[in-house]
Image (cartoon, rainbow, N blue to C red; front, side, top):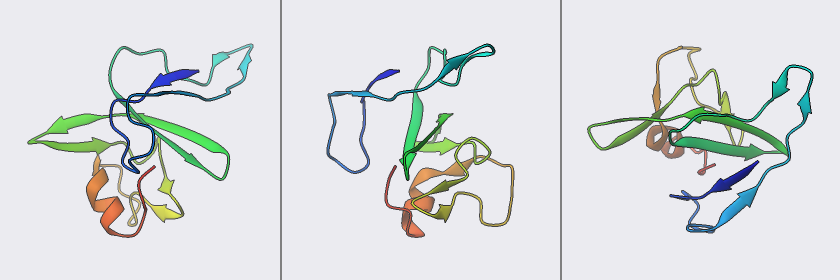
Length: 96
């Protein structure tokens, strides 16, 4: 999957295209086939993604899609509510 980077929270690849390898099997690709912004997290060679929701200038993700970032749980209480990515980063999960 090729992903054009619109915003990189680590500040290392903005404006570039990143390649992620994902298997395509009998049930189709594990990569998203949607036409909206997504947040991609690569942690210990495991790639996960979540569609983003922007509200009041903040970026929210689905913690069920990205359960942790750099070992920091995106929803420490197991909540299923959308989480603010900046709050996850503030808890110690340096950006995905």
